Amino acid sequence: MKKASFLLIALLMIIIGYKSFFFVVDITEYAIVTELGKPKKTVKEPGVYFRIPFAQQIIFFSKKLMEYDAPPSEILTKDKKTLVVDNYCRWKIVEPLKFYLAFRDVRSALARIDDIIYSEMRIELGKHNLIDVVSDNRNEIMRNVTKASRIKAKDFGIEIIDIRIKRADLPPENEKAVYARMKAERERIAKQYRSEGREEAQKIRARTEKERTIILAEAYRKVQKIKGDTDAKVIKIYAEAFSQDPDFYDFLKKLEVYEQTFDDKTKLFLSTDSYFFRLLKEGTK
Image (tube, rainbow, N blue to C red; front, top):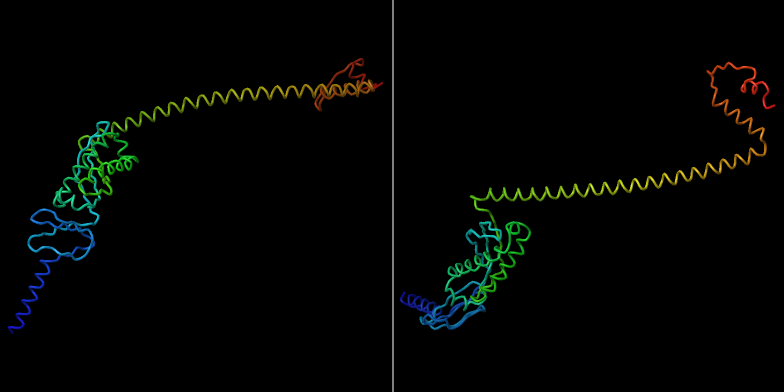
C-alpha cells in the first residue's frame, strides 16, 4: 500500500515537473515567453520547449484567421448624406511580439482595429457620393479601405486580410427624404433624356423627309426623261412606218376616231355629206 502511494506521488511530481520545465506549442499557435513580465523569446514553430519554472510564463496567441464584426456606425458621404454602415473584418496575427507589446490580449486589439477601420472608412466614404457607395463602386471603395487599414495595422503585428460592408442604410429619420430627392433627381434626368430624344427624333424625321423628297424628285425626273425619249422613238417609228403608205395611215386614224367616238349604245343622225357617213359609204376610196 505504501509502495503504491509512493509511486503515485512520484508520478504526480514527474507530471508537475514536466509542466514546470517544458511547454508545448501547437501548430495553430504562437508562444511568447516572458520572464518577470518582460518578453524573452518568441516561438513560432510547433514543438516542445524548455522553460525556467516559476520565473518564466508562456502566453499563447492564435495563428488562425479571425473575424471582427464591427457595430454599426454613422459615416458622412461626400454629398453630405449620413449612412449607417455595418462592416466586418478578417484578420490574423503575423508578428506575435509586436502584437503582445501593443495590446497584450485580443480584446484590446479588437478595439484598436475598430478605430483604424472606422477612421479609414470615414476618410474613404467622404470622397464618394451616396450613389457610389450603394452601387457597384462599393468593391473599389472597400479595397481602398482595406489597403489603408492594412498599412496601419502592420505596425501592431496584425495583417488585415479583408474588410467588407455587410449593410449600408440611411438613418430612419432622413431615409424617406433622401429617397424622395433621389427619385426627383432621376425623374429630372429622365425628362431631360426624353426631351433630347424627341429633339433628335425630329431632326431625323426632317432629314429623312428631305432625302425622300429629293429621291422622289430625282426619280420623277428620270421617269419623265425616259417617257419623253420613248415617246420620241415611238413617234419616229410611226412616222417612218406611215410615210411609206399615207392612205393606210389616213384610214387607220379614221378608225381610231370611230373607236373613240362610238360604242354599242351610240346613235348618230348623219347627213349624206357627213364625214362619218362618207367613210362608211365609200370606205378607203
